[in-house]
Amino acid sequence: MMFKSMFKRILSTVITIAVVFSFIPLTGGLAYAASKNPAAPVITSAKETSKVEDDFKRVTVKWKKAKNAQKYQVAIRSEKKKWVKEKTVKKSKANKKKYTKKKKYRVVAKGGKYVVYSYKYSYSIKGETEKRSFNLIDGVTFGRWADTVLKPMTTYTIAVRSVNGNKYSAWKTVKMKTGHSHQETKKITKPGASLTMKFGGNSLRVTIGTQITLPVPKSSKGAIEAEGISLIPSKIERYAEYYNDGRFIEDITVEGKTADGLDAWWNIETESGVVRRVHFSRKHPTFNADGSKYSFTTNAGSGYGPNGFVGRTKAEVSDPNTTIAWTLDGAEPKPGQADKSIDSSEYPFGQIMVKFAPFSGSVQVRGTSVQGRLSNIWPELTTTFDRCEWIRVYNGDTIVEETFMCDGY
Image (cartoon, rainbow, N blue to C red; front, side, top):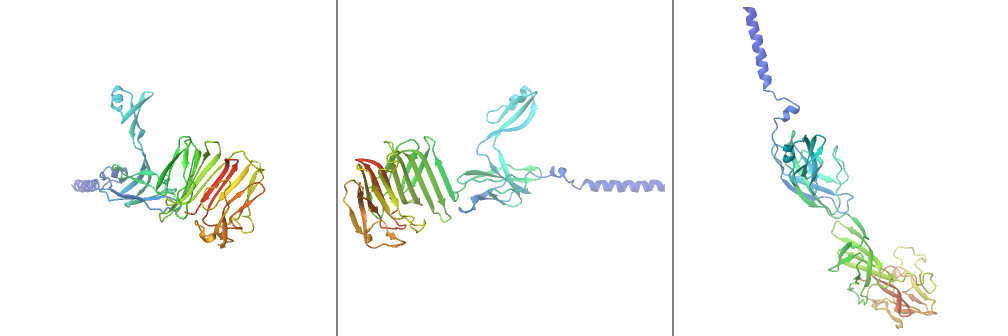
């Protein structure tokens, strides 16, 4: 009787322990089976938080806390859907019918099986976080996640989803566009390619291979008779700098040929759309290639160094049929024009500077060079100042070289 009583007590204890352990949740993968489906997060914002002058692009995305979410995954979604391999199934009529739906499923036979593809977006996961915000930073690696490479002036679809164990919510997305980089360069040479530029309240579209007249905008300081230059573009180059205060500087150069075969180019520099400088040139590709008919020389290297030093230009002619006509006051240079001088205080485009100091006295603003008679453009040893300079070289009545430059805006 004692043995039976002891056996009953031991059996009762074992059963009690078994019942107790039956209520303890298991760990590992089996614990996930009991996790609840997390709700999808609600994205509240996605914006660039880097500065224009930073060496990288940073985008910060934020969202509200989602029910049952332990953490969140952040990704960049593809802009277009594509065919993604899902699984392999038995090769049968039923499966072919089931997984052949336009813009949804398709199958590819492989041996005795069907490989099933679905048409959907792809997601490049950039990281996980328990917080409710995340920084996508150019060039930074997040542990085992791929690098984030954010390009300037690019639209991205950013996606966030909730995670709870092995369960995931649907992806929620938001679109945003990154801003400019600090410096941008672009070169266009493909026939038919275009670039649109804006300056002085005007918009101008330049297309490779299409003839266009590139203008000289009006100056607020003095009258300019130059109307611009007509050419057929073969190359367009753009350089721009952007700043945190909203300012931006653009420098655009268009190269090509004029209708009569002269090499030509036009350049404009603007600050936040306001013209700062215009420069154009056209030149015969072979006339005076050996420098025997005319020449321009300057004393820009006379001990003052390159910074801000312009110098004086000497225009010299060695050919009886060649004439150099130049102006500094915005008037069109013509053969046979009369020389003209004004007091430096009357110069409309800027304070004339000589040896880094304001120049006072008379300055010649129109001149002509022919064989046996040279002329000097600007006073000696000038330094940087706003100016308007227009030079033409004539072979008889035909222009073989022309240069215009004005930064007096």
